[in-house]
Length: 57
Image (cartoon, rainbow, N blue to C red; front, side, top):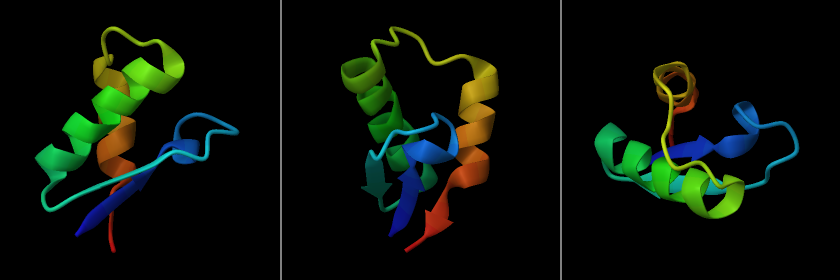
């Protein structure tokens, strides 16, 4: 299981997403970004930051 805490990218956000693979975590993070932060697209630099913040849980 892999985990990403949104607060690693967005100060003050307590959202956490998980997935079996990095791609699942990225997909869940994109859905979280849309619903919680109103992002219709996730810029490459944010994807890079998300990848860097994914941990094994």
